[in-house]
Amino acid sequence: MAFKFKQLAQAGLLLAVAGAAIASSHREAPFITTVPKADGTDFYMFNSYEPNRTGMVTLVANYLPLQDPYGGPNYFSLDPNALYEIHVDNNGDGKEDITFQFRFSNTLANNGAGIALPIGTGANQKTVAIPLRQAGPVTAANSANLSYNESYTVTVVRGDRRSGTRSAVTNASGGSATFAKPVDYIGEKTFGNAAAYDTYANSFIHTVSIPGCSAPAKVFVGQRKEAFSVNLGTIFDLVNAPAAVITSEANAAALGKFGELEDKNVTSLALEVPASCLTATATGGDRVIGGWTTASMRQARLLNGATPTGLQASERAGGAWTQVSRLGHPLVNEVVIGLRDKDKFNGSKPLNDATNFADYVTNPTLPALIQALFPTALAPTNFPRTDLMTVFLTGLPGLNRPANITAIGAGGPLTEMLRLNTSTPPTPAAMQNVLGVAAGDNAGFPNGRRLGDDVVDVSLRVAMGALCTLTGASDALKVGCKPADAPAGGVPFVDGVRAAATDFKTVFPYLNTPLPGARNFPAN
Image (tube, rainbow, N blue to C red):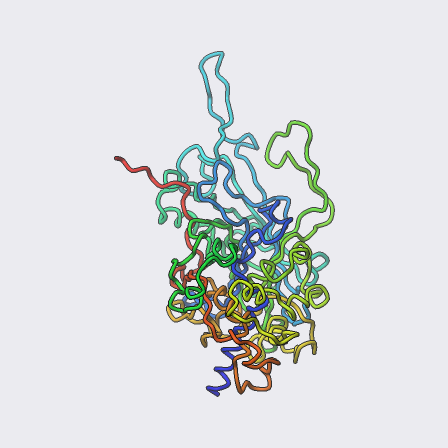
């Protein structure tokens, strides 16, 4: 049993391979750079490890990348003309069975006029709208000092995302189907210090009722500190670091916890849902689910050539929803999908992956690029890369492979999505291993993805053939390669940046307080 567990843990490295890249989906495709509000950056899905939340699954979809905290006066609201979705496949057929749809509305106070101030005196006095989102300190939702408010709705769709049965998710307190979103952390003069902003933002964690679910869930949407840990600039500059540095586990955190993303924020759409509401049956049966997030925009967009007045008046949108962003596993579109197909991937569905993108998995280019940059790091030579297909497209046997899939191409489609076994006991934050399944922590990546999982280091190692270095694997884990196929398979590649579970909150929504746009100015 110990041997089998060890092999399974090492095999867990593999699912990351197809996403073997160095940054999750921040500006990863040509078109999405033009519509950053619809750009999905990271997707997390894990069994909740907050104390006393056993049996809950947390899903977090991050959007609108690389937010500078000081980005006023407009800051980072989401797009009312976009549709943000989190999809769950609970029967292994590559199609969504449950979809959570988020739609946003932005409104100005005073019936669209915003906050206005009397300027001038006597006959020369005029009431003029202020240029800012706030006219003074803010401590609570719907503050009289807020000129701008953002809200959203959540709809659960069962079956096809467009033609399935639709129901509104409602607030468990009062039954409203509209939820308020906190204003971004403008700065300490507006909101106070981080603790004060936390108190404010936590009031927007809503307990909700999901039709068809017998237990309550939670939802939070708002700005958070960027959670992704990556040495972004170095990697995309042809891995601008000495080979001796990036091939030693001792340098795993040499450059800190978050790299260039240390001073960035992001917008999070977070749900905590009972696992029994996500699986095909409430009890028994297959406990594995697959998940991914997408954003779609209306097919037609018309710019207002006249003088627009009011929010969103510069654009009119209509027509069918057109998907422009897709994210399951981290890193896939970043450096696995070829440049010509990046927009195609963002508009695709998992069901068609074997037809559209199989070559990028069976014959990946990343190992060849690494070898070109570091000639002694020889790329694996086994083609097709059945070792990658085994876990990337089907899930790990005995851990998070859907019950209907028995082998590559047998019993179910080959699809790219983040897979989670909802029956795997969560590991408390203090005990989590950042390398997840690869280090024996079966509650971590690639069995779902937690905030503290170091997907970059895991992916680099597996891309270079770590799985091929295994010997004596069980029949269920035969991967079609051997140590001779992967000369660099045992090298502990790192990017020099690493965070851990203890660097984040241990309660929903887990992500950290966003950075303020400004701190209180020193008195002297």
